Image (cartoon, rainbow, N blue to C red; front, side):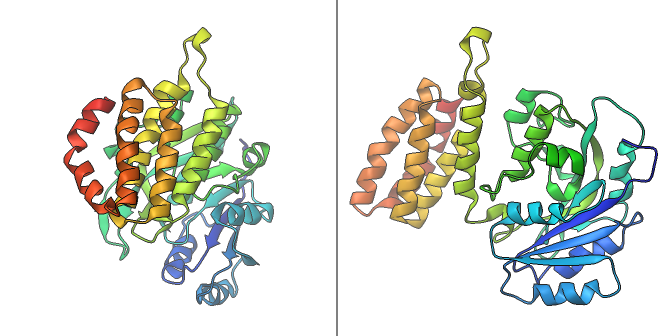
Length: 337
């Protein structure tokens, strides 16, 4: 990108993150290559997280921006709009950078290259709520995921597993593709990096853990908005990548439908387990919608499940149907192969 020193802006969205924000910001301070500025965006918190940030900011190049709650995508966009760095380093409020995180991720940006480098990203360690280790270099376990990203099918076939807290991106590239889609509160990272890839930006992957990814019930990875966001992203992909029989490219039938269908089946199963009628109806509607684009076996499966689900709702027997679905899980898996 350049032989001159590149400046880095650290962007940290905050929403009721008092439990973790001090540790996260401490990991920013501990960098062997410190960022030039730290921007924390309070997305309408109701806890004392902002007070912790205010104490942290004294004597440090830290800006705290407050806004009404609008989701993580809007918070990140606002923070980046105020950033002055050549490069943007995202950090979620409950994640932690290892001290050499920025020092390693910035290296590929130095020197001329074509196509231009849009982002770098790394492997990461998975920890639980208390910060205890769950998995080292967790992306190696998903050996079928392509790293770095080299073709469209590799980007569409599964989640991209470019974790924001494990990435460093060009601010210019970010603005060129329009930033985060603020309708999304889940899959917004996949959506952004896919658009960067399609715009012609290159990417580099470092296969060593440079950060800790904290995942637990209640973290952003399991937010209540995820199901809605998933369907917004799915519809966006279906519109962008329809099947093209003339060129024998069946993005929807062979890639997108098989990727998202199991998610929707699990969402229906969870709704049945809880027994919430509205959630069941929404999950069933989403499943029926996607089945239209899937292969015949999936459509047959939904044709069987739909009347049983409606009957379970009317008879107030949703948990019973959930248990039955568990019994027939091996059959369902064979049908979807």
